[in-house]
Length: 249
Image: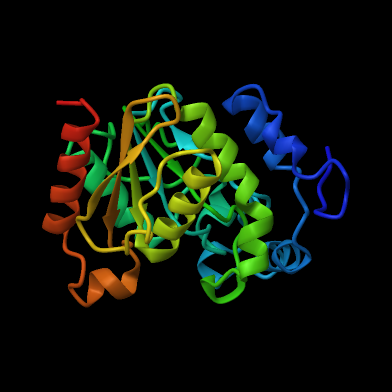
């Protein structure tokens, strides 16, 4: 599979994936961003004391959840000692702890905790995706890294299009990535582009008819949750509304 943007085949590895399983199989081989490859592998080679002795995933992280999801949750990027360690979106860090507890409270997850690939967690009606699939230094991918990684999100949303009714963006970066990706796929995005806001709900026209609703929520980062900018009640309310709009109630 082509793994570099200057390769004529890039990003055809993403665009031609016939299903979500094939997409994940191609994604985990990607080495398109040298800075991110170096960072994810350095984190695995020099883990925090709490995780010494664990074998890190240290590869791009595929989407996780229901293959026929009504709700696609768009985050930011894996954490170096979170999903980069466990190999699953939002698993193994405080942001994920907050998110999975909320998903369980509203009936979208079968358990409130997530620790690793073999923990028995299952999501119903929802899938977790991200615009950047490798852990970035300081949790800040560059614009070029977001551009290079974009085809993976684009193809995942395209494969989910037959069932997805709500795209829930966690934070402004997820919001912008979702808008950009959907617009590139021919969805009807208002002009000027709607700005991110917590609990925002913007209908976007599907190519050929119908619509999906883009929703926003503050990201469940420790900064947002520790300061009270995002409370459990606030996230529960957004997820409950997403369930209603997605026809899951």
